[in-house]
Amino acid sequence: MRIFRYATMTPEEKREIFGRARADIDSVRDAVAELIAAVRQRGDAAIVEQVARFDGVELTPDRFRVSDAEIEEAFASVGPELIDTIKEQIRWSTKFHEAQKTDKQWAMELEKGVIAGQITRPIPSVAVYVPGGLASYPTTTQILTVPARVAGVPRICVFTPPKNMVPEIIVAAQLAGAHEIYRIGGVAAIAAAAYGTETIPRVDKIVGPGNVYVQAAKMLVFGQVAIDMPAGPSEAIILADESARPDWCAADILARAEHDPNAAGVLVTHVEELAHATAREVERQAQVTPRKDIVLESLRRYSCIIITDSLEESIAVTNEYAPEHLQLMVQDPFGVLPRIEHAGSVFLGHYAPVAVGDYASGVNHTLPTGGWARVFSPIGVDTYQKKIEFEYLTPEGLGRLKHIVYRLSEVEKLPAHGDSVRHRFGEYRRLDQTD
Image (cartoon, rainbow, N blue to C red; front, side):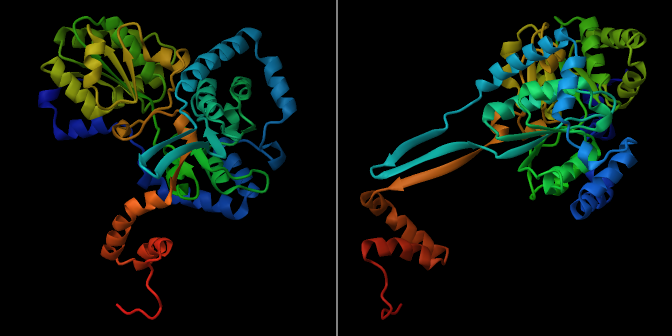
């Protein structure tokens, strides 16, 4: 595993490590645009072709949506212990996301006779995209669906590639509150959700992670529908001091690395002994991990260890990286937390590995990747809601504000704006008046 000293990293090394596997949208944009156009123009027929081409599955339109009978079969084929585990997971997720709910309506009197407020409403319909590829993700299914249900979305549609449509995903989607489940993935799923087809009604927003093609598709359909954020390969920084154990650090790095060859597990520490001991542990543990090939490729690409000169510099490096997941394996994690500016989700202390957030604690693990934690938030209840503002003015209240409207409408050369207020006070300009 590569070890860098932050002070001597070259600009090229920083671009590689801090840039990691950001989706190179430009490299696939034209190809993705063609696939979207095909679905938009030919609907179901284009989906059939793309599923056969990219997934190697022959699928007819009547099989796009998972049927009630197939849902029953899925529950029958999944053991009761696993169903109970998924239910428990959903219970934790529900508890966490219900705490995010805000009052549906509030109002305040800004000035006598001037009342303003806000109403919260759910988005009418959403597509939850669950990626496929090297694994199937019932956990991602439920963690994306639960906050949509808590938000009150009337129509929640789950999309995942046909090869990854295992019974566990169907069970998780159904238990979490999905209304429709489709065995369609990739660009075809994004295009179908955005534009609709003969058998798939369009949605209002698309949410969920995916590969570079899925991310490009989401960017290209934005405007036709809303989207959540860029979310690509998994990544984590472990910010550690002398209290951290190298075998635990190594195990957590491998947990990220096994996701995908483009995933990133990074240790940032000012403790040189810990850095080298962790590197040795990574090499040892990687030899016996079941997904060794994927892990070794991930370790080669974007995973590394960065040695800093101090804890303060480690914090600065972490904020510069803006990780999806951040583990604070330090003596005083709650003391460090207020100094963290950019991270999707933070795991405090030595007994909070990222895997717990992935599977058990209820926090949402669909997070901004590739440095986008600088400006985006995790998926949550507010992802599936929108706000409506309102205001009420009495004649007295409007009188208190009219001079602002008059003056600024003149500055912006929009006189009818001012006149719309003047009419209410009998101050409007008559037709026989001249400027």
